[in-house]
Amino acid sequence: MIIKSIEIEKFRAFEDVSFCLGRRITAIAGRNATQKTTVLGMIGQPFTISKGHPMYGCKTIDGYNFRSQFKEKFKISPEHDQIGQHRWKLYLHGGVYENTYYSVESIARRQRNQEPTLRFWNAESRASGAGYIQLPVYFLSLSRLFPIGETGKTQAVASTLTSEELEYCIKNYRTILSIHNTEGDVSVGIQKGTSARTFAGISDQNHDIFTNSAGEGNIMRIILAVLSFKRLQEEHKRDYKGGILLIDELDATLYGFSQRKLIDYLWNAAKESKIQIVFTTHSSVVLKSVNKYQRREYQEKGINLPPYAYDSSIVYLEPKYIDGKRTIMPRNIFSNSELNTVTNDINLMVLGGNKISVYCEDMRASVFLQYILANALGINLELYMNFVDINLGWTNYVQLYEKNVPEFKDNIIVLDGDVPSKPEFRSKARVINEAGNFLFLPLVIEKGLFILLKDYDKFAEFQENYSCVSALNYDICFNEWPLGSNQYATSDYKAWFKQIESILGDQTILFRFWCDNNQQQVDEFVANFIQRFNVLAERKDVDALPPIEIVQEDNLNEEEI
Image (tube, rainbow, N blue to C red):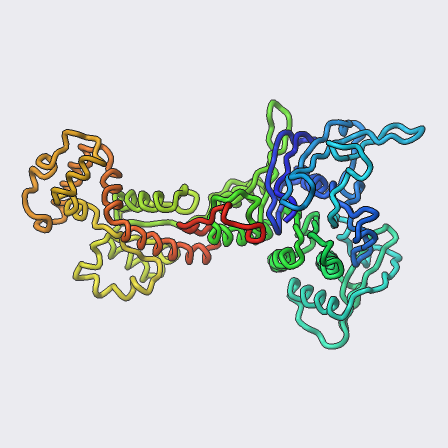
């Protein structure tokens, strides 16, 4: 879209920090006094529509210019905001500006017979007109949030909405607020208060704009802002290259359902009208809604792209104390587990993250499973799941499932590979197959490896390419097990494995050898595991596993990313 990332060299509590923005929506989160609104100001400062541009003079539907007003975003402290102590850089997507970045710094604005005042300008040019990027920007400040019933005298603003625009407003207003259709005429009104505040709302047969709540007004102002960009896009097709919508405290005055619906609305609106939307929030509901879109993207595109290549982003502004000095450290949030940490930090709470648990019959099976998944997925498994250290037989797991114990219905259970061959399995096969959270390891670990290595040619391959213990020859390996591969009891295979493991010092060598010789089985198992895991992840609203085949950045064009 427009902005890839922002790099802040210095600005109040920011010092040498950076973070990325999503192509469509970005949530800026943090406690109070973490400079969230300041970040919005830094993002919007370089953008405007100047005289001579085809869209110059265009206004938003609620009567504002498409440019960022300094006084709305920044309150300058005469004592602490010193000229020259503010410098930041916006990195831009291709085609936005003549350069791939735009630098801003604080300079002295000199006026005749007055003390110099601070203003922000292009750090690389003082020329007239060099101070801005020619793209429309609209900043919705907290001044939009007030009950019109408390504002005193107001003046109506003449409506310019077409019938199609009116229908658009009403439809999305009702969807976001969960208001059912009412009979009779419905209209959208705009009122300007004596305090220069603007209120927008709905009038129908049940109430009029003067009885609208602050929440209703908030939603309508946001819809009208989006519609303003939509109108620009339709009226200036050739000249419209996208725009930036900045919203301070998005969730204020809204209940949880409306917050979720609002994120859905903004996500779609950003795509349809080429708007990069950045907002601040304290709401865990809003953050989880944005993270939902993040997780879907990671499943589709993989997790190895730079953050600015994704359509959604969460940025957390975390206060740190370094040598007694309070600083703000921004960081991009990717996973649900990171988000849990963030929401806990906002609320100054210490709580555990929500993950999917994975159960196996014993620790060796768990280690084998982790080996397979880690190698196939190339991720830190601990970010997605908990491997529970417990020894239970497969019949115990089935009984717990049948007893409707939630823990064993909402998490993954991986049974040993020989379970389907057991006589008692037949009576439980239907339950296991229909459960959706049971899987079988692709290997009966001890017996399977015994059979593989008992083949002399395979052992020779293992000894040459895998084993680092030269003293382990074929005779030593099978000295106490001379019989054929299928002539021992389960306890015998386990005893053999324990001996070989002690000689090698690392059981994963054996796992790697088997996987390399049975890659198709491994791939099928991993694909099945991902599918079942992600079904549960969607149900529990946690991070899904990324695909094995990830999308590389080089293979994506500007529209795709």
